[in-house]
Amino acid sequence: MKIFHIVENLDKGAVENWLVSSFLESRKFNPELEWTFFCFLPLPGALDQAVIDNGGKIIYSKYKISDKLLFIKNLRKILKEGKFDVFHSHHDYMSGFYVLATIGIAFRSKILQIHNNHVDLPMRDSIAKKFLINLFWINTILFYDQIIGIANFTISRYLGWIPFKKKGVLYYGFDLNKYKDIKPFPIKETLKIDNDAIIILYVGKLDPLKNPIYLLDVLRILNNPLVYYLLVGEGPEEQKIIQKAIELGLQNNVKFLGWRNDVYSIMLASNVFVFPRVEHEKEGFGKVIIEAQAAGLPAIITTGIPQDAVFLKNLADTLPLQNSEKLWAERLSVILNSKKPNQLNGLNVLMNSHFEIKNGTNNLLDLYR
Image (tube, rainbow, N blue to C red; front, top):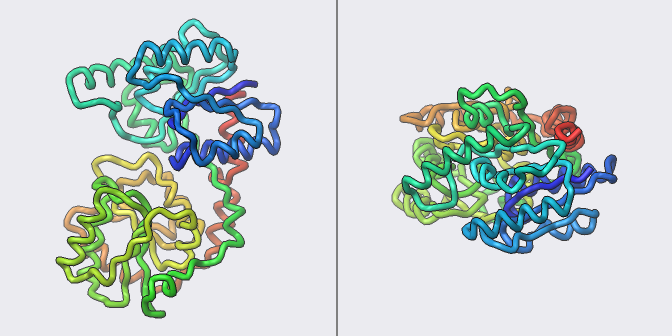
C-alpha cells in the first residue's frame, strides 16, 4: 500500500513529529507500507533523515502555494505518476484546495485530518479569504472519504451541522516507553535558585492564545518568594511577560528556558503544570497535557483544552479564566502543599491506553485498511 501525506515540512511541528513517530513505529510491524511525505515548504527539516533512513520518501513542492495553478498541476502530476492508494491531508481548510489535484484520480481512500480549531487560510483578511474558507470547506465535505479529528471537539467544530458519515477521532500516539528511564532535569542548580524552590511550569508558545501571561497575577496573589514560574518556549509575548513581571516585582521569580528537547525531564523536576489557554478558541488537542500526566505532574488547565486530553482525571483540574486569578492561586496552594503523585502510576496507565505509540499507530493504519 502506498500512502501519500501532505504536510508543511518535517521539522519541529507537533503534527509532523507525531506523524514521523507513527511512521517509524509502523516500520516495526508493517514495513511493506510505502510512506511518502509531500512538503509544501521546500525546506529541509530536522526529521528528514529519520524518514529517509527508514525507507520513507520526501517530495518537496517545486512551487509555492501562492503559485496556485502551478502548485496544483505539479501536485496532480506527482499523484498520477505515484499511483498512491491513500491520500492523507493534514491542513484543514487548505485541504479543500489540495483535493482539487485528486479529481479523477482513483484512491482507496482520501482522508482529511483536522489538527486544530483555527478557521483560517494563509492570506490577508479580506472578503476573498472568507469566500475561499467556505469554498474549501465545502470541497472537503464533497471530495474526502473520511474526515478525522484529533479530539471530539475538533471534529465537531469543523463539521458543524453536517452529518458526515465517515468521521471519527484519532488520538496521537506517544512513545511513552522512553520516559521510563528519564531523570529529572537539575532545574534548581541550572537556574541557581533555592533548594526549597517550588516550580510552576508552563510549556508552549508564548502567545496571546496560549496566554502564559495570565499566571503572573496568580503568582502575585500567591506572594511566596519560593514559588518560581518557569516558561519553556518562545514567542511574541515574551517581552510583555518580562515587563509585567517587573511591574509586579516578580522578575526574580519568572524564568525562561526557551525551546527545549528535554521537556519531560523538566516536568519530572517541577511541582505543577499550568496551561491557561484562552477559552474562546480551543486548542486542537493539547499534546503537552498528556506528557504532563505521564510525568505524574498535577495540572491546572482551562476549558480551552479539549477534555479528551485529560485521561487521568485525578491529575488535572479545569478552572475558568475570567476573574479567577484568586481561584487559581487557591487551587495551586492546595496542590503545592500536597504530596506529588508517583510518576510511574500515571505512566503505566497511559502505556495501556490509545495514547501509547503502538496502539495509536495501529489506529492510524486502520484508517487505511
